[in-house]
Amino acid sequence: MIQNERPALSNSLWTATANQLADYAPLDGDTQTDVAIIGGGYTGLSAALHLAETGANVVLLETRQPGWGASGRNGGQINPGLKDGPAQILARFGTAMGERMIALSGGAADLVFDLIDRHSIDCAASRQGWLRAAHNDSTLGDLHDLARSWQSHGGGMDPLDRDGMARMTGTDAYYGGAIDRRGGTLHPLNYALGLARSAAGAGAQIHGETPVTEANKQGAAWRLRTPRGTLSAERVLICTNAYTDAPHRDLARSFIPVCSVQVATERLPDDIAATVLPGGQHVSDSRRLLLYYRKDAEGRFLMGGRGTLRDSSTQGQMTRLRQVTIELYPHLSGLRWEYAWGGYVAVTRDHTPHLHELAPGLLAGLGYNGRGVAMATAMGREMALWAAGADIASLSFPVTALTPLPFAFARNIALEMEVLRLRLLDRLGI
Ligand SMILES: Cc1cc2nc3c(=O)[nH]c(=O)nc-3n(C[C@H](O)[C@H](O)[C@H](O)COP(=O)(O)OP(=O)(O)OC[C@H]3O[C@@H](n4cnc5c(N)ncnc54)[C@H](O)[C@@H]3O)c2cc1C
Image 1 (cartoon, rainbow, N blue to C red):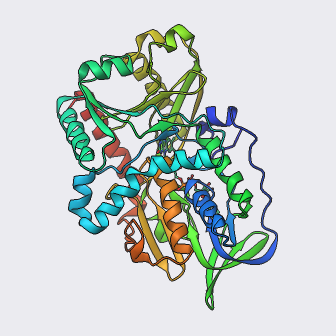
Image 2 (cartoon, rainbow, N blue to C red; image 1 turned 90 degrees about the vertical axis):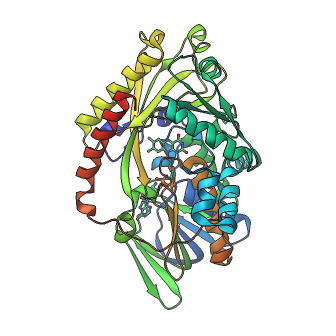
């Protein structure tokens, strides 16, 4: 079992069912490379793989082992797109950049499936579509607008009425919604482990148990300090997302780390499994405090949602997720709940991922707002393009100035109060 930062977040289905866990040796001694990558989740691993495939020398440093962070613990929902739909992206970023962002984010799930195919990654990938379920009339209208917006930008998303949604989910709790046919599911930790193996196979050097504690500019190169050695590189990619810490304090203050948790049942008996998400789709529902759920490849039911900062209240939140499951699917009430785990997602003020050039030669990519399986993979590829020499203006995502959030010290209290407000609104159904 992988030990997480908090005991309440550790009993993970994915570590219990993982392929062989990673055991990359620490960096030992002083060395140099073309590109250094800090962080071994999807962002860093995708960057490492894409760079190694170009023949660049690349070294990835990870505090624990690849897949330890959110990439090894998430819901395994491969969801294309950003929180904003195409029309809003164009309005915010203009036509030239907006069209590139739409292509990148809309094609992010294709990239994941393509990498899995090309590298034969064994991660139970399946592409049955992503259900966006509306819990009231107004969100139904929003989802139908979003589907129409995607239809005029390459398609992929179709509206569903109440009956269509009930047929696909196996519950009549929703007003309708939409299906995004580009989406699918995978075993998230096995996907991360497969990316690491493929990157190493293509020539990337990966070091586990190697936290970067300091980054200093020495001439044209950055020198990264770790407990047992140093690494010099002209280009450095910071891929630490919600787990960003020293030595990048301002970066860590540019988002809010929000806890997300999941619970999973034992395997459903076949007759029951056939009544819950019978087509194998996965679901995000439209509540303000998002619920996301699916079955895994062996027929367990997984429910995810918002966690909290303390273990005691997180246990309460996990109990709430089990209750919500029974409200949606009363016939699951007799089942055993075997797993409960979680981690942190990086939420940005504009709910959009960010690329920041922190200093010449130092690029950070983060802020997937809980939607990083596809987007972190795609951002890693963009960061690899930059590290290989592409002009920043040619990337398919804007590189913006870093703006640390004000009152970072008080954000946890503010966040807990906001969660209480949103929960109340959700309970009122408005
Ligand atoms: C419970 C949960 C459920 C989620 N469900 C979904 C989902 O279903 N679909 C979806 O699209 N997204 C989901 N997400 C979000 C998704 O998992 C993340 O957006 C994505 O994994 C981010 O990848 P990453 O590589 O940027 O960061 P991470 O995977 O978090 O990796 C960052 C890594 O950086 C390392 N690190 C930090 N500091 C240093 C340092 N100084 N030196 C070296 N290494 C360092 C950490 O150890 C960590 O391994 C979920 C997240 C959680 C927590």
